[in-house]
Image (cartoon, rainbow, N blue to C red):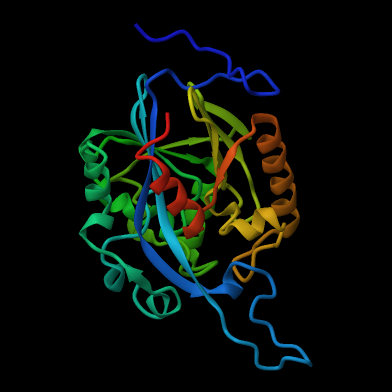
Length: 289
């Protein structure tokens, strides 16, 4: 018998929490490196007083989230990059964003196995957005009936970009298969996908990016921002994104929404690629519940 949904006691507004026994694992799927100018507006920019500044780069985690949900089954939030970047990405992407750490343990099936599960146990894949470094792992779900949940605007935008070359290279056709993946889109600006798991439309970085909110019984609320915030400075310093920014006004409005959610739920934020934040959470405990 399914559990009766319980209100989340620590929230400032009514909300349901995940069923008791829900577990959330953060998966490290490898480390990329990129110029800070991609993630922080004005980073590495020259000036009259400093015409040749030190060119700083940033190491970035490729992150996925595994959720063992007693009612919905095993869920995956985003999938990281494809395994073979030289083939799937190629130059110049592998030169601009080289993967500097990637061993057997970082491969998606192995990362899931290290948590005590099998990738074949996954009952649903949820996406914040479909850029190639977040959706490349869909290669493992081709030819299956596993539902792929994504906002309608994100799916349409991804297909348009891949087909026309608009916003070139950020979306790749090979993982956007129309006949080998079980796409499930939604058009709501806020949807309770499963008990305790809510997706919020957060346009800006992409038109259909969604923030995932997970209300846990013991460890409280987690907000997984996908790439609305690449790194913590985008949030804590309100420092806008760099060259990867798209629609700035929407990004600001989404930031206000995320800040409001954090305040109302006293939430822990997990950013799209912040290695320091993710690593600290991974090392603190094997999973959150």
